[in-house]
Length: 192
Image 1: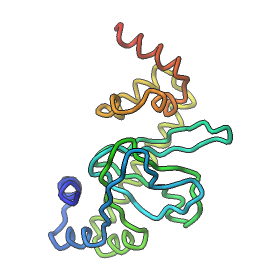
Image 2: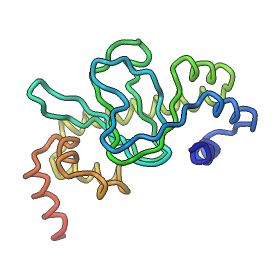
Image 3: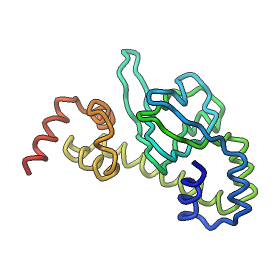
């Protein structure tokens, strides 16, 4: 697992071998089975999660039990509930594995220590946060203004390598459309 992370981080940030070893020394390697929860609604989020292999999703449920997928996190993506992690408050979200997955975990305290000792990691972390804020704002704009077809096209562009790995009802949940609407859109796309 560490090898995948090292390949990823070396492409993003210039770090010394000592920095990489420090990051590795506080990382927790975890194998997560399909359908296993990494975070449950009501729990305090304890980790920043890096996905080495597999696929996670972050979602929230309504009182009627319906699920609303906020994001999918495939290989070389990060997952967490930043509000719960940073404020140490109960999460409104679930994070679970859609496939058997291999992840690296860092506690809030350990990641803060890494950022304090490795300025390049702190800078990269801030860049990721900014990027995620922009993605979130774009999703809100899309939810308010895009047609179902446009939402579908944006999904395929955002997640080109995982569409076949996700059940259609979860794609529909992410897009905020019914399964029937998603099926209609996909059929129309195939006819083009």
